[in-house]
Image 1 (cartoon, rainbow, N blue to C red):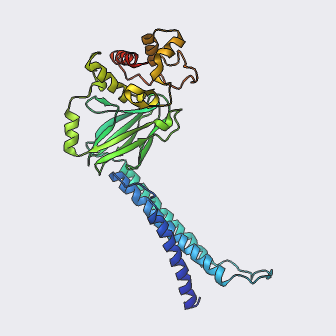
Image 2 (cartoon, rainbow, N blue to C red):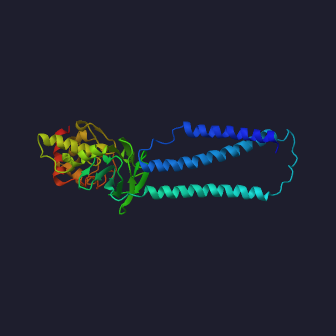
Length: 343
C-alpha cells in the first residue's frame, strides 16, 4: 500500500474513532458511581467500550476506504479478481480478538472477585422483600421500612430474602444487583463512597404493584450513621404507642412506612396515592357492601385479604405476606386508625 493511501486509511479510521468516542463520552450512559464496587464495574465497562470503539474505527475506516477507492463503475457486472486465503492475515485477525476477549475476561473475573469480598468486619443487613415493598433488619434486631441507611466507607453485606415471589435489589449508583428468591439467601457487598440518597428498584416483574416497588438507600457519614443507629427506634418499627391521642399519629406513621399500605392504597388522611389496591377513603361503603361491621371488615382485609375481594379487583393482588411483619397490636392500631379516618 502506498504511503498516501495508508495516510488516507488512517484518516478515515481516526474520523470513525472520533465519532465513536464522542458517542461514548457525550451520552450519559451510566450514573455517577457511589460505591467502590460500582467504580470497578465502571472500569470494566469502559475497558470493553474503548476496545469496541477501536475495533469499530478500524472496520469503519477500511470499509469507507474500500467504498471510495475500490467501488466498481456503473454498469460493470464482471466478476471480481479471484482472491485466495492469506495465512498471515487470518492468523492476525484470529489472534487479536482472542487476546482482547481474554483480557476482558481476566479483568472481569478480577473485578467480580473483588466486588464479592466483604472484608473482615462487614455491616450485615438483611433485606426482606415482599409484594411490593422492602424492609431492612440490622444487627441490633431493629427493622426499618422507610429506607436503607448505610455508613460511608464501610463494607456492607446485604442478605436478600423474599416472603413471596422473586424480587430483586438494585441501586444503579451502587452497580450491585441480585434477585431475592424465596428459600435462597443471596448476598451482595456494597461499600458506599458518596453521601446521598439513592433509589432502590425492583427489576423483576413481581406482580401488579411491581412499578411501585421502590425504596431508597441513604448513605450517611460515619458519625451521622452511628448517631442514627444508636437512637431509639421510631414507634412503627417496634412497639407503637397505645391508640388514641399520640397513638393516632403513630398509626399514621405506621400506615405510611409499613410494607405496602401507602404504596398500594390511596388514603387521603395519610396523603398516599397508591393505585394497586382499593381506595381506602370509602371503607364504610365497602364494609356495607361486604355486609360486615367496619372494624371487622378492615381487620379481615389486613389479615386475610382474599376473604372478600372488592369489586373491580382480582384475588391475589394483595399478598398474604404483606402484613406478616405486623404484631397483633400494630394490626389493631391500623384498624382503629383506618376506621376513625374513613368516610
